[in-house]
Length: 237
Image 1 (cartoon, rainbow, N blue to C red):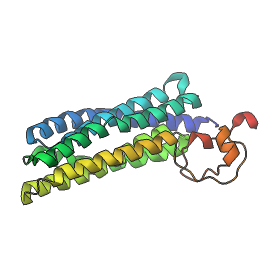
Image 2 (cartoon, one colour; image 1 turned 135 degrees about the vertical axis):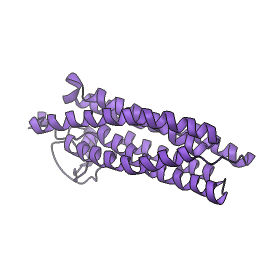
Image 3 (cartoon, rainbow, N blue to C red; image 1 turned 60 degrees about the vertical axis):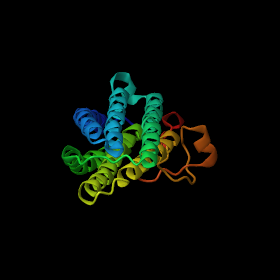
């Protein structure tokens, strides 16, 4: 991969966005956790904990593009797998608590703070997520694209949690909260699997790839591909 001046600028921009995300996730996670515990809302607690997972993904991307690791494909693959693991940290707790609340029929309380927080994330996270996914394509970085996917996932989940909070507050549908929490856990597992595998491109036939399995199967790196197996093998040039 050719790390020209434009590529290096994109790498610095990825780090800047990751720092911005980390600051926001710290605020969002702390406030969301307080709101979730106060309201006994497992969906809101799960969403707040997902902020910690997203913050971890931001730290991973910052690590990835610091110092000599900036131009290291080995660091890229490690970062991509670490982002995948961060998805999986959330799912077990949220799923168990959601099932428990469905069985015990524990009703969450209305949460105005939760509604405000999720509405704010619904606006902010898509902007960060799309920007990071574009940078991931520019950099050939599955870790950066994965962090962007987490931001988009945060927005989707914020919308779902917002709906659940609204239904509980104004319609009394207490069961919407744990059901949405289960959806949060399921999506986190799915995204983690895709990030671990390095999914992001369709394969056909092309030469000069740096991953043996990709060379055997053939891989055509389509626009938007972030799989490290699809990066050009500079040594073969």
